[in-house]
Length: 273
Ligand SMILES: Nc1ncnc2c1ncn2[C@@H]1O[C@H](COP(=O)(O)OP(=O)(O)OP(=O)(O)O)[C@@H](O)[C@H]1O
Ligand SMILES: [Mg+2]
Image (cartoon, rainbow, N blue to C red; front, side):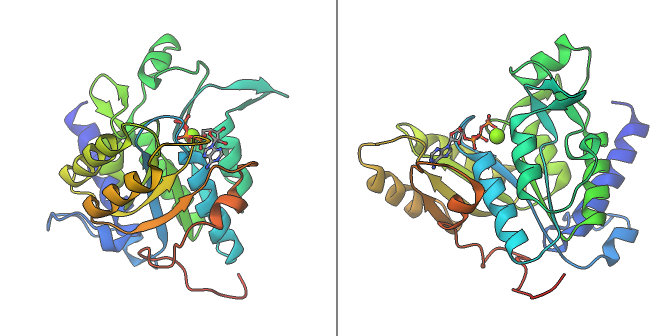
């Protein structure tokens, strides 16, 4: 990336950070921006211990809870791999679920700046499609969405460190967005190490883990309680809830198992928009 591009990217990252002021970058040199005058709002980056462990379910549940409180909320799936054309529009399952759970309609070019066709690792499918996933369009889209909403929930891709191009991965993206992170732990054998490594990686990026969710993706897991206890002892962030294996997984049913009120900038209950 050229130094010009770096400068623009850093400026966008500073603006993005200004939206969630509790998480402003440590650098005193961060420029003051128009966004710094914005009222605090709930924004988060949802990551997971793996792919297919419930990030979309939890992101949708967060949006559902925000909408229930009459907050203008929008989800983002900035990089989606696996899309099909229907009625002239590309659809991705995750992106569609987030749209359904939110209540602010933004152009898909903003909520999913990179809609890739093949359901594969994003850097591979992007290369196949002649696309280079870059941070700037994502940061710019986030700022635009945040300007139009009171809350933004961004779903990551797969686990915490998924390559997006040769030099940029989802951890870099989370770092540039500088948002509080919510970690979804898919309860399965091996999840303790995956979760603890992810917690370390989040901290190593200077990001704040504001909560984690234990999600029972499997019908039955031996010693599930013991696994959750081991994680509770070792993860120094609140357990926001434990979602059981749901017969009909959806945002509303998952939200019933989450206690989100302690999250930074979580909106107070209000009766009108
Ligand atoms: N607690 C649960 N009970 C029942 N089904 C679940 C539960 N959590 C997730 N699922 C199902 O498991 C599948 C994967 O969940 P989800 O799409 O939320 O994972 P993800 O981490 O977002 O995956 P990806 O990495 O592909 O984005 C979905 O079909 C979802 O409905
Ligand atoms: Mg998903």
